[in-house]
Image (cartoon, rainbow, N blue to C red; front, side, top):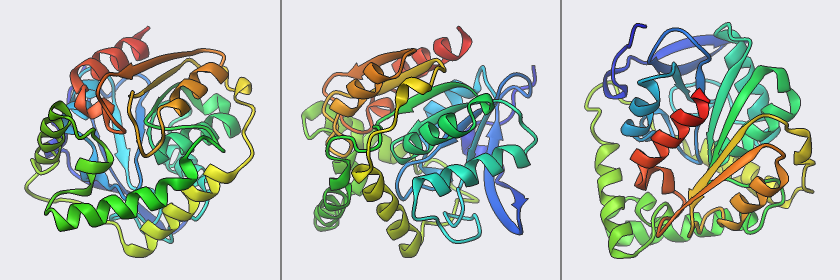
Length: 280
């Protein structure tokens, strides 16, 4: 198996989808079922935690991408999760894949659920992290929490993710600083920050998802790993428990003293569990 670059050095490529260029990066073995990473609110390619990407890419072909209108990808960012899922499906097919694994974090986890519902044969396995079902508890409050914590971060000269993704315990604060520093490791050819318009459209999509009627998750028969911190404020951790209970073939992991970014705080444990899940 040929192993390509670390994520820090992976080149940014583009693929044309209906006249719009989508930006992506890939690394890891060139064989086997690829793992498509689906990103969180306001995130671009540089917001994936390098040890998570590198850890999974040590055994699996990993592809990260900016969905329509996000970062370096062209077009207008959709205002619904369903439209985002359609674009993700088009991206996967544009790369020539007929079956993939999905790792959806937060908003990306919403998108992953819709892909599995609408195109079940396209998906082999699902990892749903820091996310919840349509109509899930507290998801309609993401906008308020995000804006409040962003203001708090601005006033304290911190990255908003330190408040949004981590607990404010001593362990949480240390993990937050380490995570933010890791995101700065890539020095050259960094992605474009999300635009205000794209950010607003994503918030609209999340708010709508939070107010939707619940989906029948019993129709998703894929193996699913559900992971989160046990103190997620953005997408309350009860949503992860709810997901695992309603999905017929799911396993749940909740990391202690961890928030929305539990998979980043416990990246070593998460990578081990994710790789074992994908390999099993």
